[in-house]
Image (cartoon, rainbow, N blue to C red; front, side, top):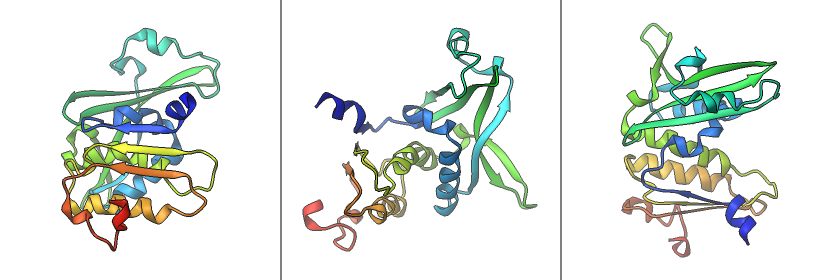
Length: 205
């Protein structure tokens, strides 16, 4: 039982931001997935990625960075740094080939000239920040037929989100479900539009 609580159960509170699932942002596959989702959901973001920065600029105690073994192949330290509600910066520090490198996770918008312009995550709208914080959950709940169970409990799934965006998050999860997947999403909401029997069965509400 203890192992299930440790490995399978995930809690997402009303104040949970990206820092609660920060380690996902060190995964290139996740960054590609997050970029596709953010672009498809019309947030204005075309890509989310890491921009290499001076490691001394990362706002964490040096002892944390120094704790990463220099010779580790994939050792990663990731940190989220909130300063106000859903305002945060995200840094990834990796140790590869004996060298530590730091990246600042940023969102990229397309200019009128077609160029990708980087923005700090703290500059995004509240709903976009909330979505960025939920994308690790969406990535984890994808319908892969594996043996890994996942149960996410989300308080106020619709917080800071437009009703259509909240519905799309639920739809993306439901579309990924099959008889072989072992994933579950449990959430509270104030959004009455989700009480739609074309979306969920009566016994699921």
